[in-house]
Length: 121
Image (cartoon, rainbow, N blue to C red; front, side, top):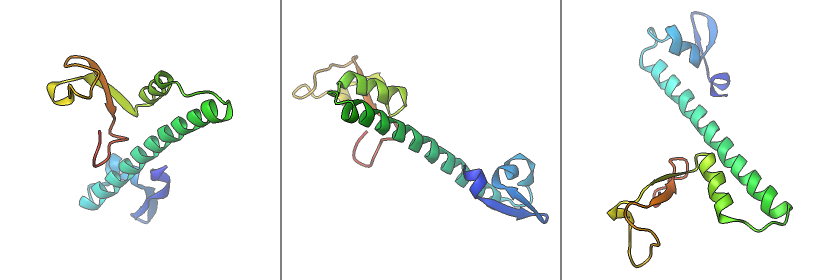
């Protein structure tokens, strides 16, 4: 989508920023790199947005419209399949014996980069 939005003009011809990536960027230098990076980032955001929208649609459809009760395992599976969370092995840093039900070496789930914020993840 980003490559359809962001355009530059080189040699009197309209070219999308992706064409710079494949042979037109040498004369533009840093500007071309910046445009390519912007397009790549826009593509990444678009893909992340689609995953979040799919997650929201499934939750609303299954638990609001169909009057179902949310099942934590199903929600976790959906989030994992969409790449919103990921599993990893717990380390000592992860485990608080007073609060956690898991131990070092157990598989735990954490937010993927899509959902990481400044204070969590």
